[in-house]
Image (cartoon, rainbow, N blue to C red):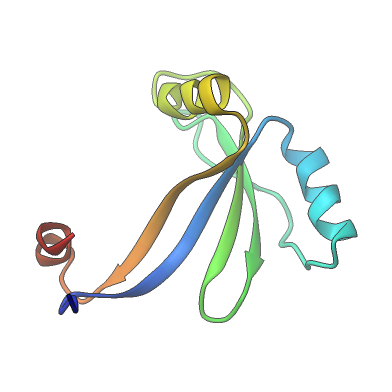
Length: 100
């Protein structure tokens, strides 16, 4: 079935237990990473991005425990590191969500 509003993948979020150690591992694998970013205090997370043109991979780590990042911490505790979510590119996000 073809989707009319979802036109691709924007990025994959890979959650990791130790953000800086994970970045070093990806660098050793040959990837070029952005400088480390820090999200808001409410989010309590930081990231590195690996640009793939036009898509990218986001390495996401918890920097401080907050109410906002409980789902990510639960994912790490229950499943370990890995792809937690995929963000899609959509023409119309509401219609795209209904299509999926």
